[in-house]
Amino acid sequence: DALGTDLYHWCDLQRVEYSLYRRNDKKNKSKMTPERIEKLESIGFDWELGYTKQIGRDIGWVEKFELLKEYKEEHGHVRVPRNHPQLGNWVYRQRSIYKQLMRGEKTFMPEYRRSELDALGFFDEITTEDDRRKRKKGKETRNTMA
Image 1 (spheres, rainbow, N blue to C red):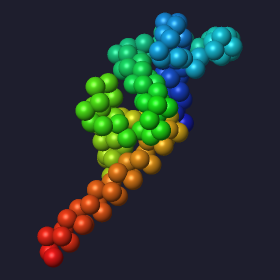
Image 2: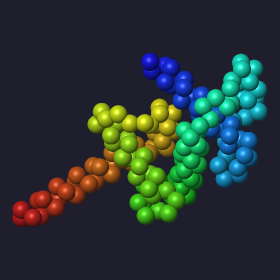
Image 3: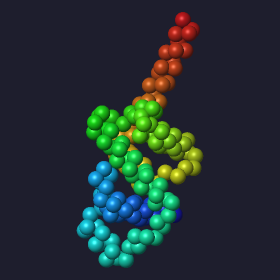
Image 4: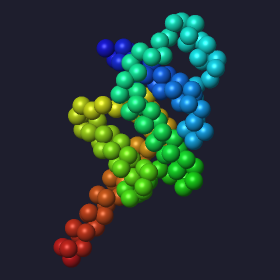
């Protein structure tokens, strides 16, 4: 059910944040706090459960997401060019996955990832980009007919 899936992904996110917190990575700051760790441990939260390849992928995703936030701070938008050395392919993949979701196709993009990207205005930019392409294509069609 949806609630179970959301809880599963929320727990995974806590484990990713905890891992980043323990690594004390200055570049990829964790949202985890000692208070949250204490509260989660007080209810018996298992930090190691599910610490698999998926957690490794989530850590990689979180690292790219942090780079995207830095990019937005620097450039004022999240329209990362495809040839950007650190983010180009990752952003392209995230947008492709989102477009699949919008077409009703099944993908693996947990709700917390969509929420994080949405908070940056990431998906707004997709709509704008798609609209721009359609307008450009329409102009090209009109120009060839003239």
